[in-house]
Image (cartoon, rainbow, N blue to C red; front, side, top):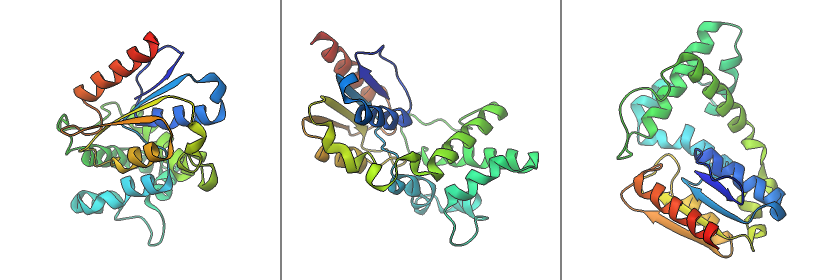
Length: 214
């Protein structure tokens, strides 16, 4: 979740925290505060973890997901091509496989429920196409332009980071690195939760209310 104080409060996915951070770094004069939940920064390290590294925890599912990726190629780059294949069957299979993998790597979250993330086939296809496009291009925030490389420029913008300890998809180390590089930020690690949850939501709402009251 990400909220830019001063705008209408809104909840988004973890990708929203990357967008909020990129916006704040580009337009710091338009941002009064940031409240970020399930923190991500869109780095290559994070992307390679979620598409490859976490396969060490789910080797069976990862083999089904990435087994056909050519040797030496990043999984995300392989999947970025598949949703644009001329063959509808290839596009559909890629979307289904991506959705199944997304559901797998969040399955250790206490609030996880079995089943696909997106019931509608078109929604699955749209989601896979957008995610893989951005991730294959490092979210268009490569190397020196990455969020963490510029995080010290956030000094002067108050920030609250809320992250679940059990978030295996986006390990808390990202939120911790951001906190270390962002002077004046606060980090709240919620021990029993994963990629979002009731406690994280409550802490997020409290932080937003506190900024509004100021």
